[in-house]
Length: 119
Image (cartoon, rainbow, N blue to C red; front, side, top):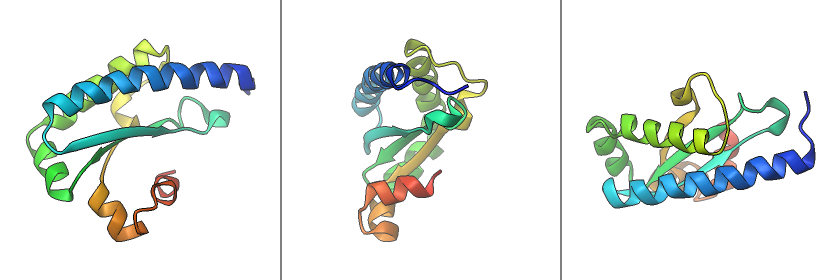
């Protein structure tokens, strides 16, 4: 079932609001975490939704994941999606991790290109 443009815009606003809260929480608690974003194809929503957590360096990302922060970020993501009214079966399947350093290396810092590769 295709979502109307109005419904898509409403979902997008809710996602931005709830994911911003998750981002601010993580920035205050996870060293090296910089920002997050999401990508979605509303023709395949919610299965296509991807939440990308971005670290300043690859080392920061690796350290955070080794330190068990993936679980915390997964919980923040699940809560943000619930707050936005987005129901998914397995929240962790929608969570991805990346770094500014890796984007610079592979895509010359072009985040739209990098995110398109994740689809």
